[in-house]
Amino acid sequence: MRFSQYYIPTLKEAPADAEVVSHKLLVRAGMIRKLTSGIYTYLPLGVRALERVSRIVREEMNKAGALEIFMPTVQPSDLWEESGRWQKYGKELLRFKDRNDRDYCLGPTHEEVVTSLLRGEIRSYRQMPINVYQIQTKFRDEIRPRFGLMRGREFIMKDAYSFDRDNAGADKSYEIMYRAYENIFRRMGLKFRAVEADSGAIGGNFSHEFMVLADTGEDVIAVATDGTYAANLERAEATYSGPEAPLSETAYEEVSTPDCPTVEAVCKLLNVPAAQIVKTMLYNADGEIVAALVRGDREVNEIKLKNLVGAVELNLVTAEEIAGVSAGNIGSIGPVGLNVRIFADLELLGGNDWIVGANKPDAHLIHVDFKRDAKIEAYKDLRQVQEGDPCPRGGGKLTLTRGIEVGHVFKLGLKYSEAMNAKFLDENGKEQFMVMGSYGIGISRVVAAAIEQNHDEFGIKFPPPLAPFQVSLLNLDIRSEKAVAKADEIYEFLESEGLETLYDDRDERPGVKFKDADLLGSPIQLVVGGKGLDRGIIEAKDRRTNEKFELSLENFKENFKKWQADVWAGWGL
Ligand code: ATP
Ligand code: MG
Picture 1: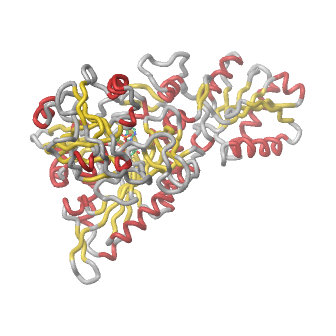
Picture 2: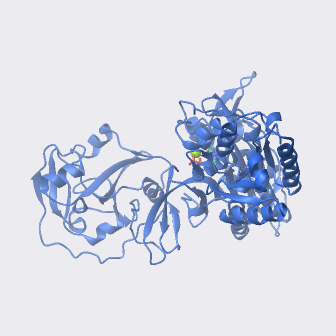
Picture 3: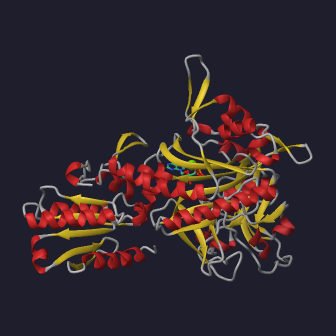
């Protein structure tokens, strides 16, 4: 592609509302333009990047036996009433009415539509397994659509749905998609990790998120130093393998703790470490008030608590709700005499001398032994893991890093097929519910995540498989016939090699061309200039490392191919 005939409106400045680097660079590189909050137009270069991502995803989906379909964006409310999500989905679901006053929504995901489709198509166990997928626009009215393509309101997703006759089949379908996802992200040249994610009611090891590793990621993931385990922070298991404490012989007593709304303040006043204090966190779980106890230096993992009590909704209590169960104020609620179900974190088994709120204002109890002084319903893993915690599988320790969720594989089980009555006849002629799985990839988010992971102060560093153009070819001397002839020749050679090339033939200063090439992030830059030609060389730059090389024009094709292989190898390709 000749730059002079293309449209790449690069900008010196990023828009004021761009907070993350991918958003800034996507706009500056002339790839996207904002229409309104969380909604973007893709310019030609942006479309190319989307196509790169889609192509790899499509190839691997097809290879894995998934069948491409295309479902509507507009979905009628009845399907969502059937699944029960019309009420539950919340404000991310954009609802509207048609001229006949019927309710619709813009699809944030397609479980309802695909279940309704296949319950009408599949009669017999012989028609399964089947996996259908699409690459399509989704709409989610996100609260904070502030990160460009990372969290849009309108965005592009690949979503696949598998239907199986039994659990074993569904597990196999899950495994196939998991492998396909590994292939996809490996082929893209991204540094990624599959992590265990919360699978809610399904339980088991049947939800994994694929994370692109980047310091700027919104998600925190726990990775074991020995490589045996990786999980989303929401899910990461905290173990306790120490001994159980014996019953204490010291009776508890009350101490006055005025002006101590925080663990920190109590520590200071009583001169004790936070690890000796136990926080009593109260939650409203589907209308029932429950308490969770964790050490003062830990945080409750609300997802774990929610799964433990089997709640659909779990929220921290309001001041009014506190008043209903405890006479204490914030900071002085405690488990002794508390008349709600109390769940304690596993590691609290190891102590018998805790400091807790006294359920009256400005007072705490010391020397509390829960086994003796409180009614604990169960000791369970309830806390968030922390850096340095032991790995729950192997022998290593957990480290916390950041990532961007680009994909999610999920076993749905019977959730939708039961709610929406999606049945088939098994080999005995008996009706059974289909066992489902769903598998998403944020196509547009992948483009942003690739940039979050790979950039420098000058611009984007696209991994070769995702780059809109693999090569930026710069002709610095467009008025020299010799340079033009050479650049044309190299351009043709590159294209014949299957390398998509952006040929900068514009009448611009070299500085402008260099700056744009760095900003746009093609992995390879080749520079044709009069001076180099006189010396018999072409200048080449590996954009990943910014290292420069001189490729001799003698045997240029071989020289180039060898060097290109090195550049690709640097990307792990
Ligand atoms: P998140 O926790 O980031 O909101 P999610 O759990 O809601 O993601 P899924 O419902 O699993 O996401 O959707 C599948 C994939 O779609 C995600 O892995 C992600 O890559 C992408 N995705 C989800 N929401 C957005 C969004 N607002 N903008 C861009 N991509 C998104
Ligand atoms: Mg979301």
